[in-house]
Image 1 (cartoon, one colour):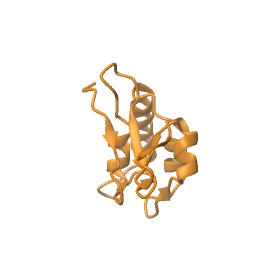
Image 2 (cartoon, helix red, strand yellow):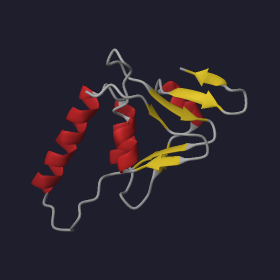
Image 3 (cartoon, helix red, strand yellow):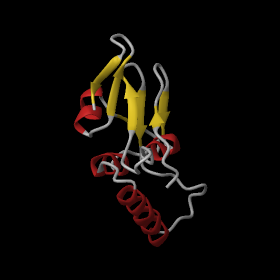
Length: 117
C-alpha cells in the first residue's frame, strides 16, 4: 500500500475506475482514509470488458479480483455490491447520506468542516 489519502474534490465527479481507485485511500498508518464533499459525486457500476467476448469464467475472475481488492483496502462491501448490481451502462451515484453510512469522510465546502467521518 502506498498510504495515500483519496479525495473527491468539491464539484467534481469520480466514477467507474476512478471510484475503484478511490477505495484504495489510506492514511499514514495504512488505515482507510477516503473523503468526498457535499457537492461532489462518487459513482460505481459493473465492470465492462474491452470486448464482448468475455465468458462467464472470465467474468468470475474479475469479480473475485475486485472482491479481493475491496477486502485488502477494507472497502465498504456495500459499494462493491451496488456497483456489481448496476449495469455497466449506468452509474450508481452514492448519496451524501450513504457516504456517511459507509464511513467515508464527507467535507462541506459551505461550512469548511467534515459533516461526518
